[in-house]
Image 1 (tube, rainbow, N blue to C red):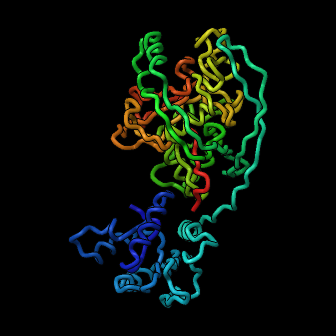
Image 2 (tube, rainbow, N blue to C red):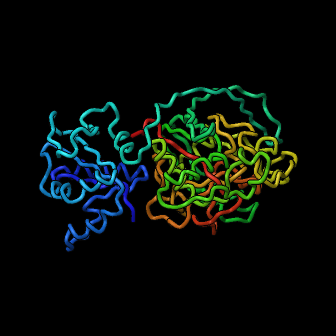
Image 3 (cartoon, rainbow, N blue to C red):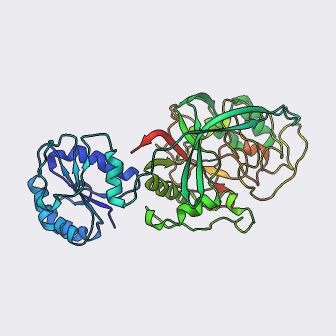
Length: 438
């Protein structure tokens, strides 16, 4: 196994160094920490000698107690070798380090990472030293204007309503950008009322609707969410960055609908949950920001955008408003056209938050493990990880191939589908937590 950085520290500084190590792990890096990697009962020097060959860089931490004996022996035995081989060896001053710290002689003259001061951001600089990837400049918030519609049960659309939302744009490479829309925090009722569930079960003879109960109140903090599902162009921009690889390789062109003239603007599909997690990890590593899959609560809250109706368009949906199997109807709307494939993102009207394609086009992976209903679900908007089936995760939003009933805001999928499955209507979109930068 390869490690990105050897954390060389005084034992008295363990709590601070361990916290930094946890942050590095969250950003997709693999730090080497003695208590994580050295098996008790074996000679530490022998074990470290075997593992040191697979470490790419080192960070030497200096705190209030200076360089410790074990730390000094590691420096003498291994880190001089790193310097001779041209591997980065980064002096890191912890918050309690003295103003004039004593550094090992071979580190004198090297640029420090200084956790005693907040500016420049020390964690960003440490990751830059480890990876060679320079931190991005601060994001600039912008606004965009769009129109929303509602429909009655007959499918008749209202007059358009003009709205404005805030977003930022992340440059992925060569003019390919990722637009992330600000989602205001709030409280909503997640799931479906019992009487509506019973009506759906009776009408469609499918017990799966009971997965949407019990309806419960959830409070969701402010976050950013992808304006669209991840497109094939965005996927390729990150999947091609093998230098950012965290756990697995990624297929550059996994989509079934990849040979269309407009395929770059179509959502990527045939990606499984682990593919999506790797994409998030690589993007987090590139940007030094936390990108991840949404929790089920975040996804449904963002989809509803303040509505309580089955769809964010209202009591029903039409083929002019989303890409799904519109040859079937939900309420009293006329039959529409069945596209029978994905469509470019942003082709249909957004919801009141400015998010596109939340109904139909592709189903979207969530971060949670699978639970058969909402009994015991978190009420703070977080992903529900505990006591679930970690071979499966929820899929939300319906797809190009699904009937309207299975594209509702509250619909939950897992059925027999597993995290490892790659299907031509499986996609995803991203979440980024506002202000959570390193």
